[in-house]
Amino acid sequence: MIIYKSLIEKYKKYLTVSNKTPIISLNEGNTPLIFAKNLSEKLGFNGEVYLKFEGMNPTGSFKDRGMTMAVSKAIENGSKAIICASTGNTSASASAYAAKAQIRCIVLIPKGKIAVGKLSQAVMHGAEVLEIDGNFDDALYIVRELSNKYPLTLVNSINPYRIEGQKTAAYEICENLGQAPDYQFMPVGNAGNITAYWKGYKDYNKMESSKYYLPKMMGFQASGAAPIVEGHIIKKPETIATAIRIGNPTSWKTAEEVRDDSKGVIDKVTDEEILKAYKIVAATEGIFCEPASAVSIAGFIKYIKQDYFKNSNSIKVVCILTGHGLKDPDIAIAKATSIIKVKSNINEITKTIGF
Ligand SMILES: *Cc1c(COP(=O)(O)O)cnc(C)c1O
Image 1 (cartoon, rainbow, N blue to C red):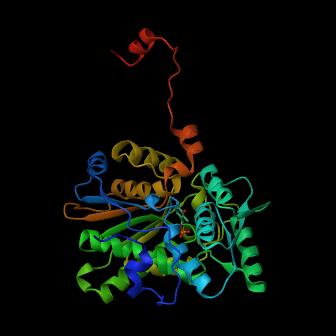
Image 2 (cartoon, helix red, strand yellow; image 1 turned 45 degrees about the vertical axis):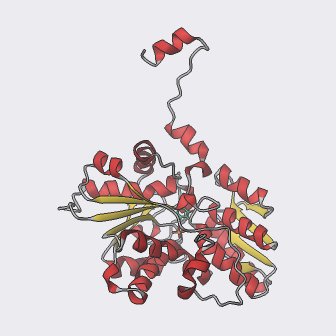
Image 3 (tube, protein in one colour; image 1 turned 180 degrees about the vertical axis):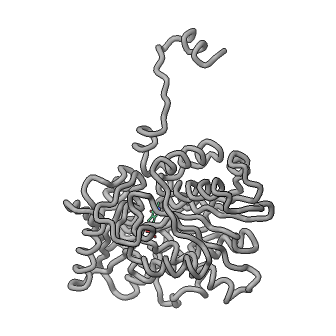
């Protein structure tokens, strides 16, 4: 019997860990790559579309892949406390891994913009949560300063171990498909994840076999928070996709390199397009992702509409669904429901449902 333990265990040979590294794991990784036949049909796309559902990680987002590495290395290096700025998922993940490692976790969040599911995780795992009267970029500046001055390990994606852990998602896709996809669609916030995936695909080609190829990396920002697309810092980023509500991305430069090296794009989609994609993927594939994740689908739809793929017959597309929809139920209720109010009466209900 083979029991999956952790991505560090599985991908040891690709990661900077040794036998001395204590593995702090919640069995992250090994997430499903789901063939999305209904979605392809709905969109009129003739190629193969797959959804990498990263919401199936232990705390409900891909952040766990990076956090298992960041926290394991922090413990190896004797750290007793970690710190991060977060739009939500980083804090949810950091606090869970800190709980597992039994160390302090300090979290700075922007005022009033954290999805309730994410905040409840940080609180339950015992993080020390500080809400600042500023945005994510302000919070990140402060935690960078604090981690430079005090014995606090920064676990935002500036931490190189985060990127290292996150690149394992690309290995899994190569294993599942037997090759890299032709195109990978994904959201871009701080741009750590697009950096990580590209690294992963390049690694796999080098270490395993060049038969895996390299995908075109298609990254998307929300139009109210699209500094890379606009070419300048956005002072007051706004979008319903709170996980990518970032005006000054940490990995801005590398995101541009990934775009150019892979012959892909960094583009933007509107909140309206995001909400539409959010509903389509839930209704066609039975997968509930958070709004920031639906950015992948929104970008894909945008490019289908632009006739970008010309002949899509033999094309393989992977859309990364970065986080679980249950993280942000308020948006679903507010933006996507059509609840019908009826009396508790069998005749009225029978009529309403059309029998
Ligand atoms: C963090 C996050 C992103 C953005 O990833 P970056 O590495 O910051 O570009 C997208 N979606 C979700 C759900 C996230 O938690």
